[in-house]
Structures are given as C-alpha cells and as structure tokens.
View 1: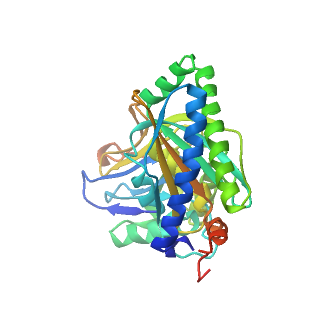
View 2: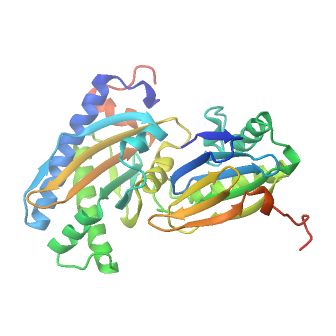
View 3: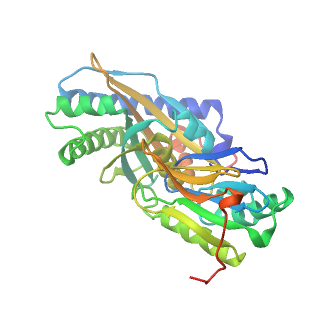
Length: 200
Length: 164
C-alpha cells in the first residue's frame, strides 16, 4: 500500500528519480546538442484525483508521450510538454510540429529519455524495467494523466508519481517526465535500498 | 475522479473535466429537475467499497440512491454517458475506456435505466457538463459544447420507449 510511504521512503524515491533523470537529461542533451537543466524531482503518493490535480491544470492542452513499462516493476512513463515546447523540440530536430513526422520525433525523444531513465533506475535497484513503444497524443492534461494513472493505480487508492522537470537551456521548453509505477511495484524499488515497507 | 455530485437546484452546474478513459455518468429526472454526475474510473470494484463513484458497479446504485434522496423518482431516471476514450494502449495494455463503458452500461441495464444519449469511445478527452434544468453536454479539448440532452422541462417531450 503506497498510502503508507514514509518521508524517508519518498526521499529515497526522489533520489532514485534524481539520478535517473540526470542520466535521461544527458541523453536528451546529446540528442539535441543543447544544454538541459534539471530541477529537483518531486515524489508524491496521493489519491488518484489529487495526483491528477498535482500534475497541472486539467483543462490545459498538452502533448503527452507515454510508454508502457514492462518487467519486474511494471507501470508507465509519461512525458508532458506544452504545445510551445513540443514545437521547440520538433524545431531542434528539424521536423514540422503537429505532423505525423513531428509526433514520431517526439515519440523518439520519449524513447530515448525513457530508456536512459529506466536503465539508470534498473542498474541502481537491480529491478528490471523496460520501456515499451511510445505513443504521442495532444489533448487535455487531465484526460491524459488520468487515463495513464488509472492503468497504473488500478484498484489501489494511491498513485505514486516521480516527477522530474527537464528544461532546454535558452528555449521555452519544459518537459515534465513522470514515472508512474504500478501500485504493487513500489516495494520492489525500495527493497534493494533496505527501505521496503515494514507493513507490506 | 472517483467523485460524485447531485443537485436539485436549477442552474447548478456539475462538471467532470478531462475525461479520458473515465466515464462521466449523468443520471437525471427531468420532471423533478434533479440531476447527478459520477466520475467513474474503473469497471469493477473487486472487493473495494470506497470511493463508490470510482467503480462502475458501485457508482450506479450509489448515484441512484443519492438522486432518490434528493427527490428524484427512480422510474423517471435517464442516463447519459460521456468519455470512455482509448487515449493510450499503455499500462495494463487493456482498453479501460471500453471496459468502463460496458460496465456502466451493464450496471444501468441491471437497474432498468435507459441510456438516452452517449458520446463515448474514440481517442479524445472530453469534458462532461450537466446544467440542472438546462442541458447535458460533452466538449472536446478546445472545441464547442455538444448538447446531448435537453433538461428544459418545457422541451422535455419524450416518446415512449420502443415507439420508434
């Protein structure tokens, strides 16, 4: 039950997210040839509705890049980029935003970030996590986040979200990178750190 | 999400923003101007008991009970379904949207409630809006509101079921 995560457990998850997103930011920087700033990640365990609210204004239009995560700890990776940021990324990659090719390029960014992040996380925890094929969709933030979280949370009440923000230096482009582990998998991430839930 | 609201006050607005795979289930008694909206997230409760509106199988009976308590007459209740999109084939890689639609439909059938209108499926997010005594509408991101049912008593002329 992720509802009973302690502050120390959340700190540990935040640190895992920090290192993993650092690796992902390096990959993104190499891909785009730009510096990437990384903010301190957030880790929160909240009821589903609150987790969606925490992700931002539900009516805001965003581009979501989602990858299923397979392996010992299944779940999903979800990247959220505002439309202007998506256009910036497409521009840096030399493709037209809002087109099939543009979406495909954004999917590739999701692929590279997701793979780098999960590989770092796997090597720290020994838990196998593999990225699936990315899907790109532009819609209301609430609809995107809720749909992905509904799959990850399932019948539990609490959604665990590890949220890192990557900014392309000098560009109006902030990418929110979220790892949404399935409710049951959190213990497997914490166990190698000696922080498995006592009451699990 | 997983929330539910009921109102018997004309002009009140009940809104579920950003429905992806979730279902906005509206139940109304047009004659007495009582309406309710539940934000259903998953098809089955599988032993869970709360929050009721989160699960289709619990949401339908709970919404009916709350409407009756607010003065609605059960046999006059009509349903409108909004949402149930397939946004991503991610996560459990199951089509939660379609399963949600089906579960809500089954639960309504079991309660003998007719679905008067629906806007479900596809791959776009929607906002469901019930304005008591006015209308039930669905809205895509950045799009106009599409009226699915008039709740205006004067216009609420209904043909008997099966007449068409």
